[in-house]
Image (cartoon, rainbow, N blue to C red; front, top):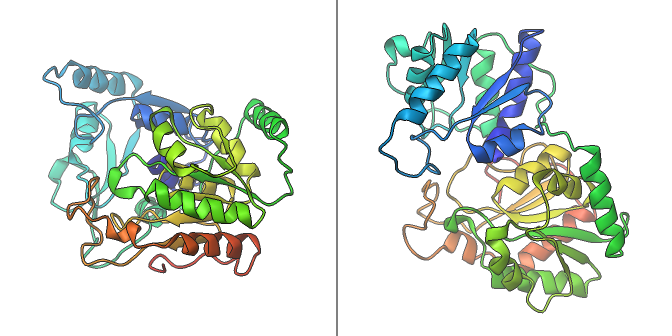
Length: 345
C-alpha cells in the first residue's frame, strides 16, 4: 500500500509528460487495494510475483507464464519498473522483455544489457540517499516526465466519507474537537512500537482531554486491544475498508502510528503524522505533511529487516511515551507546521 502511494507523484509526472497516455499498474494484491483509489491509475493487473517478499514459495511457474501472456496481449508501449534501492528490477524487466514491451525503464545497480532500453544507474546508498517519492520522480525525470505537484495521491470515495461521518456521529466525535487516530500495528515485527508504550501515551493524551480512535487490520486486533488497555477510546479495528480508513484519516486532526501503510495514506490526504519510525529503511518517512518522526538512534540502523536482527528493538523501545504525547500536542497546536527533514528525529 505504501509503496504504491509513494509512486503516485511519479505516475502523475508520466501522465504530464505523455498527455493522453493510459496507465496500468502491475502490483500485488495488497498494492491493488491502494491502486484502485489512485485517480492517475487507469487499470490494475494483480500479480503475485515470486521475487516479492509477501509471495509464498511455489514450484508451479504457470502464474508467471500467464502474467507474461497477459502483458503481451495488452501490447503496452512502455514499462517503468519502480523499486526501492535494495531491490533488483531485473526479474520484472525480463518479464516485460518477454512480453515484447519495447521500452523499459528502471534504476539498476548492475549492467542490465538488453533487459532495459533506458538504464538509470543506481546511485544509492553510496552517492545519495533520497525519499522514495523523490527517487521515483528522479527516475521518470530521466525520460522528460516531470510534474509541479509532488504530493501523493489518493481519492476518497463519497460512500466511504458518508460511512465514516456516520461512525463519528455514532460515537459522538466533534470533527472540530481534540482527537486523533492511533494505528499501533505494522506488517513487520521490527516496525512495531510496543503496544504497552502506545497505551501509556494514549492514556496521557486522554488525560489531556483528547479522544482517540484506534484502527488496525483484522490480524492486528490483539495488538490494538493491548495498546488501548485502560484507555477510554473507540476501536474501529477490523471494521474499515481501505477507502474508509482514508476517509477517517482525511477527517482526523492527527495520526499516531508505526511506519506502516496508514502513514502514507495520511500523507496522501494531508493529515499530520506522529510516526514511530523503526530504523529499518531511511526512505519511507512521512512526505508532504507536518510530522514528527520518533526513534532512538542505534548502531544497527537501516537494517532493512522485518525482524530485529539484534533482538532488542531499541530503535523503537527507547522512545518514551511522553515523547509521543509531546509530539502530538506540538503538531495539533501548530507549534511548527513545517515537515522535518528526512534525517531529523
